[in-house]
Length: 64
Image 1 (cartoon, rainbow, N blue to C red):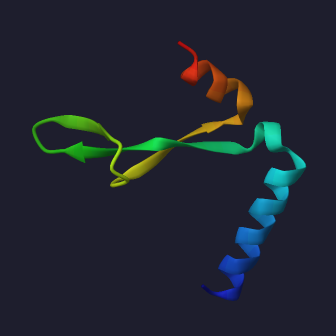
Image 2 (tube, rainbow, N blue to C red):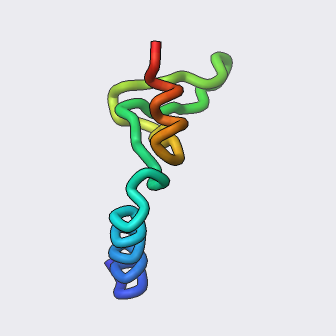
């Protein structure tokens, strides 16, 4: 990891600690684009991770 990436990583962590309610929340799911199928939601960790911005969106998405 370069110094620039390391500084950016720590700045992101500090910002999330300052405003925890507005920090991005990661889910256990990801998605990939599959030929002939479209978007496939996955839970095996492959693909792009799905995140919600802030506690309000996370609660809305996980409420039944």
